[in-house]
Amino acid sequence: MNIGIDKIGFYTPPFALSMEDLAVERGVEPAKYTVGIGQSTMAVAPVTQDIVTMGANAAIEILDEADKEAIDMILVGTETGIDQSKSAAVYIQKLLGLSNRVRSVELKHACYGATAALQLAKGHITLNPESKVLVIASDIAKYGLKSGGEPTQGAGAVAMIVSAEPRLLRLEDEASLFTDDVMDFWRPNYEAYPMVDGKFSNEQYMRFFAEVWTDYATQTGATFADLEAICFHLPYTKMGLKAFKPFLEELPEEEQERLTTRYQESTAYNRHVGNIYTGSLFLSFISLIETSSVLVAGDRIGFFSYGSGAVGEFFVGELVEGFEKQLRVEVHQQLLENRKQVTVAEYETLFSQMVDESGEQTFQVEDKSLFILSGVHQHQRQYQKQ
Ligand code: CAA
Image 1 (cartoon, rainbow, N blue to C red):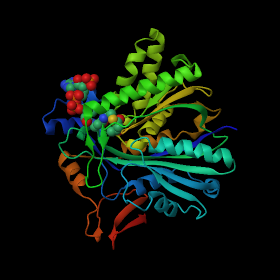
Image 2 (cartoon, helix red, strand yellow):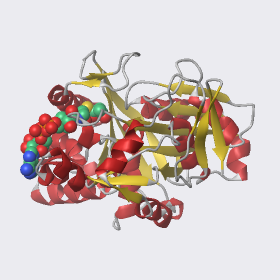
Image 3 (cartoon, helix red, strand yellow):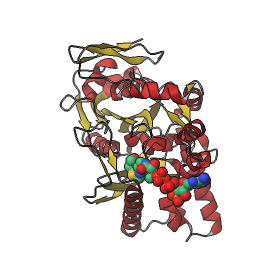
Image 4 (cartoon, rainbow, N blue to C red):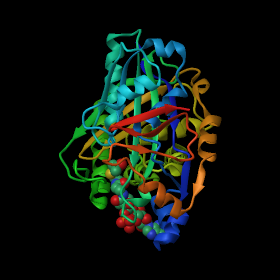
């Protein structure tokens, strides 16, 4: 039985900041952000968007009545959870009007959570071929104003429907995994922002890619010639290429060119969104399939997932016949283009508005997204469909 991604949707908040403007304000050479890190604009989340609203906004784009009836599991991968106990999946079940007869759960392992969810969904469909699973990756990457990680922030969500006989991507069974206890990036419960050793995290990312690719190639006999493209987890768009480069350089020139062009296509959307943690790898996939004009059914695409702390996984999917019909190029390009470009001062204001400990708040932000967080009452988040 073929199992994989039947549909994929994406949402990012309606505010964006130019990386050049941020660089000028921070006294940094703009090329460091736009070329060295490879980011042009950064999504900025207002207080009215959290992992629940972003996840629901991403999912509503792809759900039809048949999906709603068949979904019996909702998995939310995130590392910016809003509650230590209650799962974001249950809020999303309600906002989307999904059946009560669903298993709903939130998964965590830094940026790896949604890949874990995707693989669990695949297992679930193996046992229940008639059902569908809604997998959501939703995160707000915040490192703090004027912090080292500031140019690698972002916000957004990706929603996927996983089913038998998928119309977009068939997931292959082989996968290579690597887990090792490293302290490259973590966020203790009492901290608003993560603790990160930037240089060390880059090194670990590269080490984990080398580990899982080499193991995958050994297990399966695959070479890069077998893959039309590789999508990477992209904390910033230069990162995947840094890990890929030592391998690329060993390939014949034509193959280097092909894979580098595909890489650029797979980073086009991420360049304008920034890091969305669990969703970054899947945003890279959307970017690839909606930007490239050379992909055809049968093309095999590699995926490198990395979650700090750390877990790495390499797996492969195959584009299925008619996959083009599942693309939403115009919707996604408009989502990016219609964002309000904010000044650095406006970004700092939006950044600083948060849910606090008072338990009573009302939020007023010019946010026309379908689902918003309108406030907090008696410590309970108040979600609204507009
Ligand atoms: N023109 C062009 N390039 C320039 C430049 C200029 N004027 N000035 C600097 N650069 C280049 C540098 O040469 C460097 O390129 P290379 O890495 O290819 O050498 C690049 O710009 C970045 O410069 P620095 O290394 O000096 O930047 P930094 O010290 O400010 O740190 C960072 C960059 C480590 C990404 C930091 O922003 C950070 O800590 N970010 C958060 C952590 C992170 O994203 N880690 C990634 C791996 S972990 C992961 O993937 C999980 C996750 O999602 C967090």
